[in-house]
Length: 369
Image 1 (cartoon, rainbow, N blue to C red):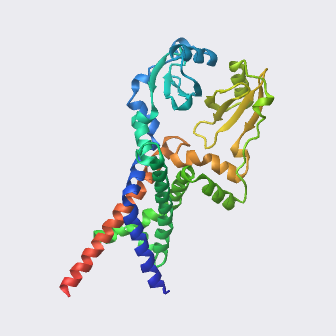
Image 2 (image 1 turned 120 degrees about the vertical axis):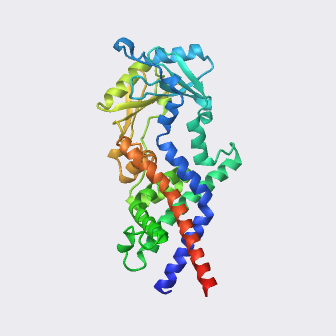
Image 3 (image 1 turned 45 degrees about the vertical axis):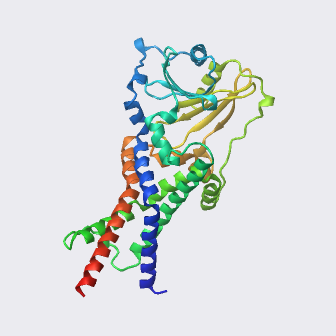
């Protein structure tokens, strides 16, 4: 196949993939951009749940006292995890077992501020639209998730095809210089090329890390093959070998002391006798989370798992959530991730507009002939 024939074939393939994926890709792109600042958006629409504060400089109550307060207010509730944000005026988030809901609580009094189902919040609905198009649980949702995964994979293919189409003709760098002197079509085409080349790697990264949540086994194999290493898992003692954890507060304090300098993100509570408590610890705006398990009686550290100290595959695998959502290095990365999330929508719209203009030009030439 000649270079010119290959160029035309790739360009047609690039176009047809855009036509097939335009609707779901627009949904993924726009909802993904909204979710970058999703927690902040949710807080803005629910300010009543943030009316807490350490009056008089007091510290949060003990975890055992917090759980007792929740149990008194909701006797049927079983706490699965407690989220502990860095901001002193923010409520703590309690996730209940079995999908029973989420509680926002005042960490200084144990008072429940908000009792809700996350899927019914604005943030939850946008997340559900992003992941499975709001389809109800069941077999249908599973196939929709596979469909969204296929669209995400096609986005990565589009990135590769777009770079290939740009690289085939001569004067590659010149065709990246924005120039509207010869009409809107040429100017938009060059902007399309320029933005595609500049954002290709990061857009592909965001797409691939999103794909890891749909097709874990396959993407994990890709990561391991590319890094020539394995995704490691922590080794924990079996619950049957441990005494029931009796002093929850002491166990959490021991876990915090095991990794000094890191801030606590959340605590996962034991669900049965012999289970350990698990702390998620991280640097502010860090890429990875260190996990600390504490159990037995008296409580002792059972394992510390820092993905950043593991293999390359392990580090990347545990970074993928932060890389996908832009949750690292603060708001500047968040703003950049919003723009990168909107990039696929911009490429689809501009690419289809260019195709429409090209067809119009051909039709005019035919009429003139």
